[in-house]
Amino acid sequence: MSRILIVDDEPAIAWSLGELLRDGGHEISVASSAEEALKAAGPFGPDAIMLDVRLPGIDGISAMADLKSRCGDVPIIVMTAFGNLETAVRAVEAGAFDYLTKPFDLDDAAALVQRALDSASRDVNRAAGASTDGASAGGTAARDDEPIIGTSPGMQRIFKQVALVARSDVPVLITGESGTGKELVARAIHRHSPRKDAPFVPVNLAAMSEATLEVELFGFARGVSPTTTSARKGLFERASGGTLLLDEIGDVPLPVQIKLLRAIERQEILPVGASSTKTVDVRVVAVTSRELGPLIESGAFREDLFFRLGVVSIDLPPLRTRGEDIPDLARHFLQRATAGSVAKEFSPAALCELAARSWPGNVRELRNAVEHAALMTGSKTIEPSDLPAPEMTSGGRDVSTTEPLLRETSRWIEDRLTQFDGDGGEASLYDDFLQTIEPTLLTAALAHCQGNRAAAARLLGLHRATLRQKLRSHGLDGESTS
Image 1 (cartoon, rainbow, N blue to C red):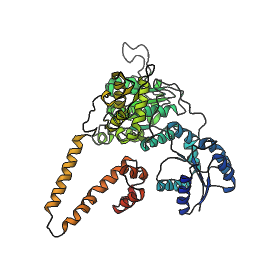
Image 2 (cartoon, rainbow, N blue to C red):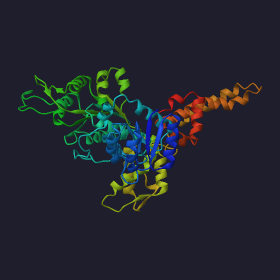
Image 3 (cartoon, one colour):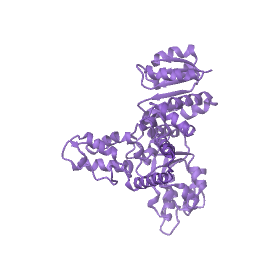
């Protein structure tokens, strides 16, 4: 039996967590403030702490150092309903074991507590979360202060990943559809890293030929041609001490991939025309909107380079899976578009229209639509008529994908009806339909909510217990964890 200290000023949450963990055989102590937790921590001697961020008096993250000094290096799970990137970074830097966003599934919370208790090495957790200096943003480049906006479960996952990887020097591979904000995430990793005061150097690899790309990346030696009277530094050297962003890594020609692999693995480069290598100190963050798996299978992308770049992989969700973030994003873009002029706002109908669209161009397309509306309307209120026409029809849904699905469903129904023999078989048709369709719907809802069963239940309009029962009946319960 382990001792768990729950620190939360919401009685319902504290009670629910307490009952859940007591059922798991743990001894529970509850505090409604950080001050109360600090008084109880020493005598109780918790093995793990679940700590809310927003508390009356001292906030949770500010109290973590004192809690650790009184309890030793126990794992602390931070809970918040107001998560953003800065909160995630603060939590990780303060030494949090993990980061849990409200509302959360109780089963997921219990599994996280168990992982915290089972963690074999407290040193590993400290290395992942400790900090020797602040995480204030450095002015490394234009747009460096552009915030990453989102409260959806998918973005909370991204915030936590950024916070965890920023403190290390390992290569990072950021994937996602075009327009999802991959460069913003790369800049956030740099901004919250120990390299934040050194250069952040982005390069679009798809825009260069093979010969130009090699020179741009690695530079060239003096005398490499009759017209070169001096050496030139490449981007690896210009990013010395900082971060090099390799945009569209999937478009790099194979000969350059070999040199890239050497540069990343050994931190050595060979300038064009040089006879000896140079040592560099660069963290590489690679970005791609292409699927690298098929490129590896076709031989167009080196598998060893993929594994080296993907020490940590961050996959950004498309905007269509994080609809709850659209109003905040739209207001942010509108504020930027109207800065220095008359302030404008969206009508409820305009926000509904924005939320109904599928946004194949993702956040970039949304930003362009908002900027278009801000310019086209002469009113202080933006209406649906001020928005540019959507690329998709039928309320933002792609009819080209829904119509084949409806045709397949109709064909299945017709096939089943032709099998009806009149002896009562019709009684099972509805059940057969549910057994065929329902698992796909449940799986899709869980995938959309990143495995959060509480969020999936809300999306489906089901009680969480009903969803759990349906998952078990279809044999999907093991797939529903995050």
